[in-house]
Length: 434
Image (cartoon, rainbow, N blue to C red; front, side):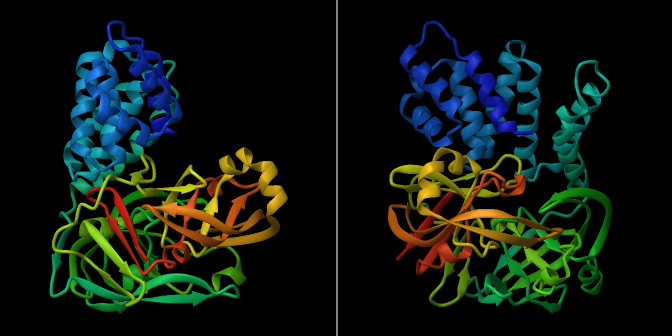
């Protein structure tokens, strides 16, 4: 379910509000139609007083979540449901409830969220004309909230310099690169991969048992190269250098790719994902000193330039190629410089086919191997945070790409072209230092 897209498309039809400046209402419609949260935020910040109440509150609901201002989204959704529910159709209501649920979980309001979503799902189950897949995402969110409601809250302690070293590990015939850190999982040494493209920490069943994680009697679905039902497990203590976390939740799943040759390069059994990294508020990845630091307090550098995905809860960077905006998944777990999905291919098909090499690929990841073809562009000019860089190699999806490769992506090698990269999760800002 593309929740944000559903909200946007229905919102367009609702914005025929007489008595308000029609040029700004039209701009709101255009912003909703494009699905661009940056355009929505600019309109809301600069001309919010000229918009209808419904347009204003719809913009607030979407931009709040996108830019990690969760209280704003919760207040907006509650206002919409209280004042405008009779004007909304079922898909919009379903989408707004889902958006509210995602915000509540991000904010740690798991018990309240489980009660809200549980009541909602029960009220719509079996209702004629409502297909089960309409509330599939709500059920998954309800399960997650129910589990988290019974778990102790994650806590974090910063000691000394608030830093921990990393190494850039290379594996496989193409020397794929990943970030690895020394860690103590319940007092025992591990070298997990640090992955900003993973919404949560992941560990194999064997490692979970070896490190004494507490298995939780509940299932969830992890979508990687293919979907798999996994378990949750709780880690009492995770230590990364000067940073100690308690009550860290892991998804327990196999890392098997289903391909013997590929599996020999999966030389790790744990991944540190965003549920840990976001607890730090901000991380500074220093590629000169090979160290990651957590500041005492996140620094507000400027207007937000990363947005959060509604479904994946990962972050996308707003970058530019020749003034064309590109939203790229911030993914330290990806060893490509950058990947551009099918939308970019379709839009620039003739140019890509004239300027790129065609190559075959096999990509091994959690639970699967993806085989297909792709295009390779060299020295691709890109700017982010006002800084320009030539990306040595950018991969573009071909017309026979598979669904799991649709999303644009910025991998670790592109970030390592800079001396230091700062990701401020609190303010949704990513800073690059030459």
